[in-house]
Image (cartoon, rainbow, N blue to C red; front, side, top):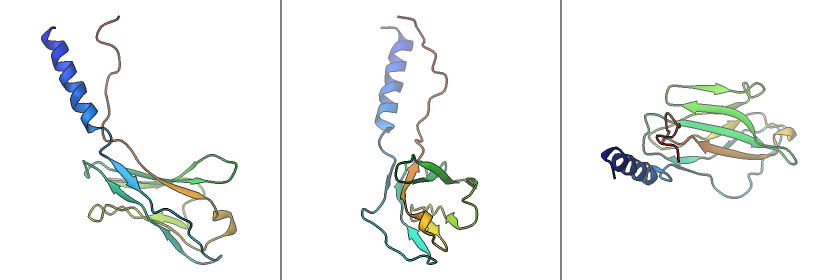
Length: 132
């Protein structure tokens, strides 16, 4: 086995060990609230690199598909169109949380909300080193 292939295998093993270490945890169960109230949905995360965080909230309505609502990052934030005014989340690196707050609840806010964390292990060039 050539030295470049040995190094590649060591790198692959290292990256395999990195996967699965980052995670999000949302409390199970329903949150019940009244129209006009404010509600906060919890999301805890565990990440190896807290200096490069990308956390997202999605809304999944019945018979629909998850829709991106907002993202909170180590360096800033973004809200999707329609989620600028009543929806907010604060990324707290110390408590490892990014709770979603919805103000002035409306009946149309009824949905399942998902918190997601972007993987911190990424790859660069994906072209094969050698054709098989």
